[in-house]
Image (cartoon, rainbow, N blue to C red; front, top):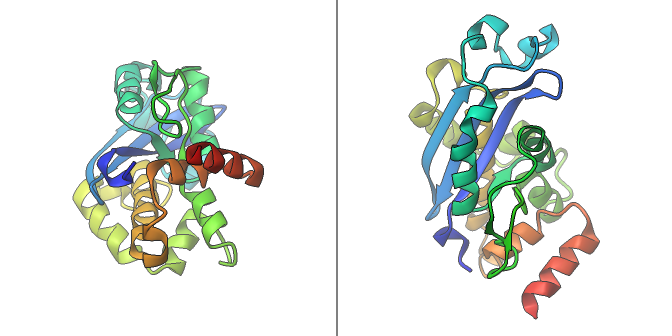
Length: 222
């Protein structure tokens, strides 16, 4: 399954378990490029702590009249039916999604073509992909990987195209989603990987557990 032929919707959320999601960003990768993006502020479930405001720059006043994340069910359910979801450190995004909706609609299991699941995963996780493929780099944090692989110029060009002017920075949801998309697309530049990169391979390599990776890879060879 050529991964360029299926859209991958890369998410990032700003927020936490206490305040809930206060901003989301989605960057859709298809055909070897970012083809669409969306970002919205969301009304929090409670007050945004000061330390969170200092991190992402979103104040309680700025989102007081925004729609809550739960109002975007149709949007996120449609994304999951259309392609797999992705993120950098996907367990965080999945946890925040599940706090709002425990399950997706019935959707394809892109790890096991032909099967269907009512789950938000399996995910394409750029943190785990880079940890598995490039274990010796100093850090697998999002910003550090962008710096290590000299991808900031590409990211900033996408930020100028898709992000609101005030949100073209790390810890802004869409900018972070675009950073993850840039990392994903960068894998295609490695000739030694090009023969291996299929969508099931990306999903299998996104597991943190080596046992789960091997199980997923073996399952796709049968």
